[in-house]
Length: 352
Image (cartoon, rainbow, N blue to C red):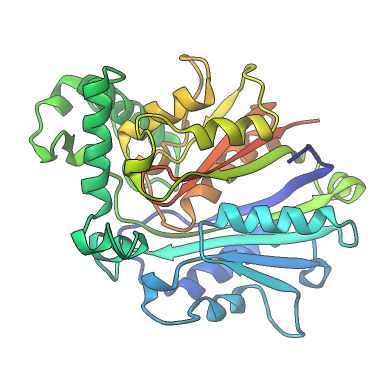
């Protein structure tokens, strides 16, 4: 989609934790409240609200409805929901702002993986005829992708370990990270396989969390925020669901989404990517065509905290935060959904 006069003017997120005591609603209420307060608006100024979550995680139909308590559903509000990461909720809210009849929109994402077994839950998103009966869990699929990268010569196990060391090292400065610290690559390679050729550190942690963003148009954005994070382009593309029908060592949908979002391969101050497993960062880096020395996942990325249904929007928030505090002027954020990078969203953010 083309660039627009729409910017992020407020945001908030919870820390990623292994097992939150609160429900999704309880995680969202203070998060949404903080994002609105940071934007400096009243709730009734919000013209549209969109949420992203997954009913499978809570095991109840229309479980997302209760999450609207965080937005304040009375008096009645204009709202929508996507059964996807909050990044896609933000995309829908951005599209709504393009209509031009409202000036402010709210988007949020939330998820708790702790009450369930992710290996069982996420197998349910697979094709019900060919893949789901096999019980293919995300880690097994990621192991297949990692082995394909090794066999193709596009990556080595050392490359995987270097991604982990960099991510966990970067996370030391992120107060919302679940895992952080200094790791030696050789020591990581000495660890036993968890699901060959992946080791335990190549996997993301199981995380609970929530995130919210407030967007505004044009002069309203400038009034609300001293330095808004302007959305110069955002796009998402999808590939065939069955991994056997695509090259899982590359991501053509990520490449296309980046180009459609307006990323021309130029310099970036910050890149935040949803590389849930360490080999995926290598795939996404190549698909985006970013410089090898680019500042990728300075927050630590999903390997430091993986709040499902929020992790993609967290990438956008982390990139936007650096635009808004002046430490970056051009940033790119990436979100993904489906098995093995099937569906990818790219958002290009810029300062004034």
